[in-house]
Length: 416
Image (cartoon, rainbow, N blue to C red; front, side):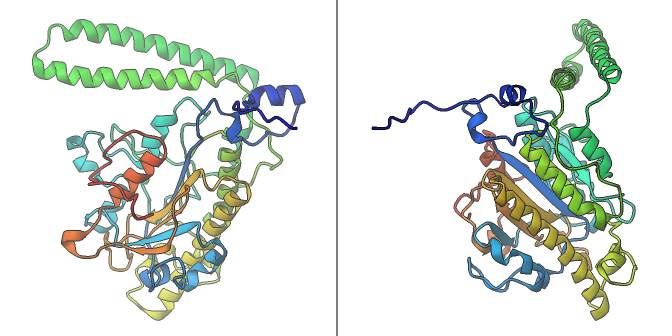
């Protein structure tokens, strides 16, 4: 008789690599955790939305016929859901797209409990310190020609994206020289000392302030504590070697060249547990000539005004994006990462030609959801479901104990 132990098998990833003398990083296995279920989140967005009939199926359900731009998704049925009629109830065209991952415009942030923090930063706060990078915010190229402005901190600060694939690779997989690592460690200690001194001065001042000013100082103390926490977390990783991968450092290029490379880099980042949260921006600088159309510019094609040739060009740009998203989702599945990774695709713009922020193109893949291919949410004004309900659902599935996100009114657990 064979006896199988019911005790949870735990294996230290660092000990395994040290003992094996491996030159390649072992992918993170769920059994290597200390009883925690590893959860991941990836968001992908563009600035100009999608042509509605090229994105939303006309039918509902798992067997819904997919639009032409979704041909690459045919073999992924049961692993993704397109959601119709979701948005944040905003208007303003390009001026409102920055609220895509928060539901909160930057000028409204002061009145919100969590400001206009975006979903990626919200999730990153939850896992900060567990990986080298709490979040990896990237772009497939320069924001010239249309900025996504995708990621915002709790304090209302725009998070700049890393726009070169070579830099992403170096951050993930290239160790700093010893002298540079030592210098960074010394800088962390110096910054910590400065914060200590500032904190003491602020506390002494706080005793002489009125109630209103004391409230402002408490907000300042909160900011200082957050900076101190971030410094401690970053410093803890200074002396740890980065994982080694078989991939060679990639060359930078145009948006169309860098986008597939970024997906490959993020796959490796998730495999090696270098991060559990990441974003990709598809910027307005997309090189349209690379997909076989006249190089008028992505923004120009988005203003098609239903002119047939411009619409055809826009569909080509969108099809390219969907093909590489499908490729990424497929690779996540092949590497047993899809069920633990929530992938969100969308835009803060619904239809770029109409400059509307309503009925945003939203796709969710992976994450262990009950995927239906296409779910049409209520369209009537009094019955509309805010997109923030989906974000609250995703935050909870990520492991965050919260009852609200942005302007959410509930979850969407009954939908997917």
